[in-house]
Length: 325
Image 1 (spheres, rainbow, N blue to C red):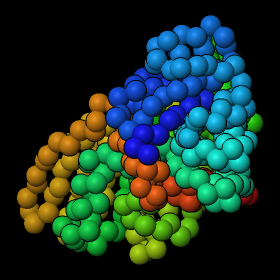
Image 2: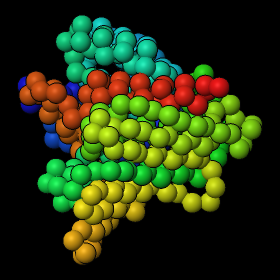
Image 3: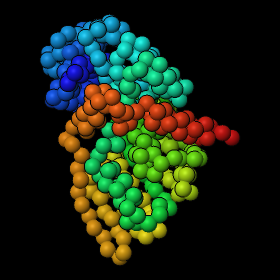
Image 4: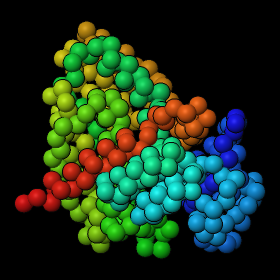
């Protein structure tokens, strides 16, 4: 077996821009089927990506014995049910972030994959950014000494109207939470990748736009296993997008102004050096390549279900902390 036959569950914006083009350009992938509820939209997606067939329901797609792996690009509240069923059908699963509504559902997904002997990966694609790998290398070599503090500031501006197809991200029962769930989870995975275990989590959340029932601002104070502290600030709203990470060590610091651009500045020994390590033009492609290779070779993917579960546990801890009196 040198190719994996894929099925797509969902065909929204992220599939149109990233997942679909990746699956149709990687030599070890073959996109054979797509499911989407809207019949006309389904036919457009099937034609756009050259899939062999389309299904109006995801259970029908999972019943297709020719499919070996599925990409779950559905709303987060559907992930657990779909992943468990996919595992029971013997399909390998690559699931969009956030992994699930909460850590209980995430654990059920991990358990289902383990019981059925299939791979489970979560789409934390920043894990594979060259600039993130460079950050890990800098920390491993001790170039800035022992890490004392890390700060991440992430903000997105879109505020969708109720008729927008992604308005569900503002509905707690469907999204699980606000920007902390939606894109804060990405940054938590990066922090775990760079610095290892997070021991304690304290958080505050707030709502400025009261018409939504999820937070639009969240600030986390984290303590890592080595005693270092982390501050993660996320918000949705305002007038600018931000995606910065700064790490302070005993001998210097390293800063990335925008992770998606990959400009990194290292300050150490009285000198400052900047280099640019942009990500692949399709950020999902390295992620899907890695997952497909893990299936073909029988190895663990770079971001597996257990990592996704730990991210979700930290998100849950943050919400509990913010809700505490």
